[in-house]
Each structure stands twice: as C-alpha cells, then as structure tokens.
Length: 198
View (cartoon, rainbow, N blue to C red):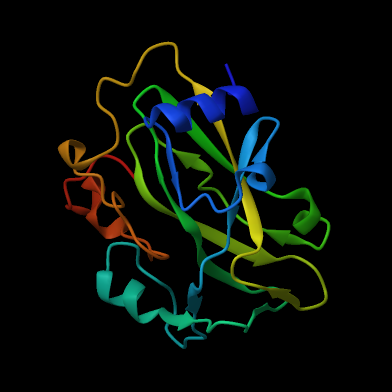
C-alpha cells in the first residue's frame, strides 16, 4: 500500500518516519509523496585520460570526482550530457516497515533533467540524506538552485517489517550519509569487501 498524504502526516507526527528539515509541509507533502529539496553539495565527474574506471579500485573512483559547494544565492549549472551527484537537503529516516522510492518531479523532467539513473530505492531502516544522480538529457544547460524542490519520495508500506533492515548490522555502506557520496562499490562482497548490500 502506498501512503497517502494523510498516512504520511500521521507517520511524521508519530515520529517513526522522519524528514528533516521539512520546511513547508503544506507545499512539500503531496497527495502521495513528499517533495525533497536540493542541497548545496555536488560531486562532479572529472574528464580523465584513464582508459576506464575499475569498480574495485577505491583510488580510481575517488580520483574521478571532485566536490563543489554552491554558495547562498548561487546556482549549479547542469550542462547537456553531464552527470553529477547531488544530495537532498533533507535527512530521512525510513522505518523498518516502509520502502521509499525516489522519483524526479515532472516539471524538471520536462526540462530533460533526470534525478536518478538507477538508484531510486530507499531501503527500510535507512537514515541519512539521499544522493541524487543528476543528468541533463537535453540540449541546453539548466540552472539548478539549492533549496528548490528537486525530487519526490513515495512510501510503500510492507506487508511485514523487514527482519534485517538497512543499517550497521548489515554493514550498510551508505547509512547516515551526509552530502552526496561517491560509489563505494569496491567494498562489495564480490570485490573482497564483505558487504552484502548497496
């Protein structure tokens, strides 16, 4: 069952679902989702001369991105063909019986801005800001302003609470993240890192 605005407000009031700061509930709570705002930090992918990125090499992944912070009153220009990691301003805490799904707002989609490439799931038990995978599929640069509503999260109630929710007990590598986080795929079990989930 997808939570309605009534359900979302009740869960927020009960405190088991957290979206903080929720600056304007009347604006941000939609009929079946919550709009999340754009943060000020971005990880930009550098042009590089290396032949490829090896997912099991932390050094290569770290050297491939550089952090940009957008000051008050400024904007981030997302150029055609660019792919950058952004973040939500809000920190979320998802209870063990809910699954979050992050989607782009249709108004930005109509400007050819995509807010996630593949990672639209926010697992039960997750805490932290949400990293956004921002792309411009259009032919003109688009100005993104921090604090603008950039995405929406939809909550689906599970039939039963997750028995092993996202978190430190699972070795979840993005728990409590602040700001955009580069890939930590090198810590996955298949690369010898021993972590089972994303």
